[in-house]
Amino acid sequence: MTTAPGTAAQPLRVAIIGAGPTGYYTADPLLKNPKVVVEVDLFDRLPTPYGLVRLGVAPDHQKIKFVTNAFDKIAASPRFRFFGGVEIGKDVTVADLQAHYHQIVFCTGAQTDRRMGIPGEDLSGSHPATEFVAWYNGHPDYRDCSFDLSPERVAVVGVGNVAVDVVRILCRTPEELATTDIADYALEALRKSRVKVVYLLGRRGPAQAAFTNPEVKELGELADADAIAIPEEVELDPLSRAEVERSQDRATLRKVEILQEYARRQPSGKSRQLFLRFLVSPQALIDDGAGHVAAMRLVKNELQASSTGALQARATGRVEEIPVGLVFRSVGYRGVPVPGVPFDEKGGVILNAKGRVLDPATRQPLRGLYTAGWIKRGPSGVIGTNKPDAAETVELMFEDLEPGVVLEPPQATAAAAEALIRERQPRVVSYADWLKLNEIEVQRGRAQGRPRVKLTRVEEMLAALGR
Image (cartoon, rainbow, N blue to C red):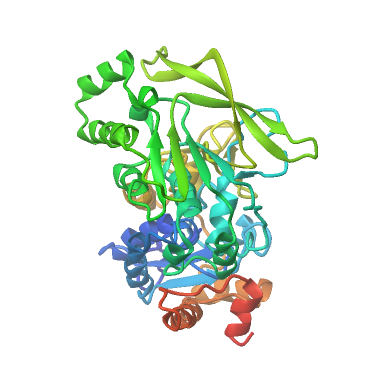
C-alpha cells in the first residue's frame, strides 16, 4: 500500500459486526477522531439495528430505548453505512471482509443461555429466558415460538435484570402491556394467561442479587400483583452482613431494605402473587408423567466464603418441592462463535486481550481483528457499560494504525465492498430503509396509542420496503 490508510484519499475502512449498542459505541469514536478519516460499515444479521435495545429491553421500559436517538445521530455521519440482513459466515465470510477492510470489529454479544445442568431441564414447559424475551419483543427468529401460559404457577430461575423483566411481564395486566411496544401476538397470548403465582429464585442471598434497585422497586408497584418475600430469606446472614458493613455500599443496603420491606407487607389481595425467594437452588424438574414440567425440587442453601473471599452458595440437606408448570432459566449467557474467528470455549467469548483478537496457537494478536462488548468480556453490566469497553478497543485500533499494523485489503473501497454485499445478499437493508420501517412501525403504533407496533417477520419488512 502506498500510504497508510486514514486520509481523505484513502480512508481507514472498518467493518463492525453487530448493530447493537456496542456496535454504535465502537463506531462513534472511530468517526469522531479529528486526525484519522474513517469509513464505518455496520453489519447485522437482522434487517433492523439496535440489537438488544430493540429485542431485549422490556417493552414496559420505554425510557431505556431513547438511547436509539443517540445511535441515529451516529448513523447520520456521511461516512457511516448500515448493511442489515447480512449474516457473517453465511452471506459474507471473514475472509471476504479481510479483502475489503483494514480493520474488523466483532460486537456480536452473548446470544445463548447457560444451562442449569439439572435433571428434567429439557422437559416440555422448561425454556431459556432469552427465548421468551426475544418472543415478546418480536424477534423474527423467535416470533413463532410458543409458550404455554395456562399453568397457574411459574418459576423464573436467576436474579439478574433479565429474570426480573420476565417476572414483571408475566405479572403485568393486559391493560398495562397494551400501552407498550410488546409484539401483538405476545400481547394476545398474555391476555389469555392463567398465571397466578410467580417465583423468582436466587441461589445466594438478597445482598448478592444482581438486579438493580429500580428494577426490584418496580416489582412492589405492580398494578395487580403482590410482591412477597420470606422474612428469614431476606435477613442477612453473618457473612453477608460483614461484607455489606465492610463495603458500606449504599445501593446494596437499599436493595436489602426494599426486600425486607416486602417481607413485612401484608398481601393486599391482588390477583397475582410474586414470591421473591433467596438461598434456594433448583435440583430437578419433575415430570408430570407425560413429559411436561409439574414441579421443581429446590434445595436450601447457606453462604460460605470461597478461596477468593467471594460468598458462594452451598447446598444444605433441606429440600422442598414447589408445583410449577412453566420454568424459565436466566442463569447467565454465553457468546456464540463467529465462523472464522478464534473462540474461547471456556469463557464463551472471542479469544482476545483487551479487544485484540488472538491467534489460539501463538496467543499473539491477529492483524486487523478486534472485539468489543459482551462477546469480548462476557455478559456483565448494563447497556452503558459497553461504552468504555468499546472505547478501550478503539484505542487499540488507533494504536495499531500508527505503525501500520492493519490488514492490506486488495479492494479497500466503499464501492467494492457494497458491490460484493449486494451480489451476495440482494435484499440488504440500508439505514434509509430502516428509517422507513421505523416510520411505518411508529405510525401503526400511533393509531393504537402505543410507541410502535413492530414488524416481526423479515418477509413483512422487505414487503413494506417494496422488495
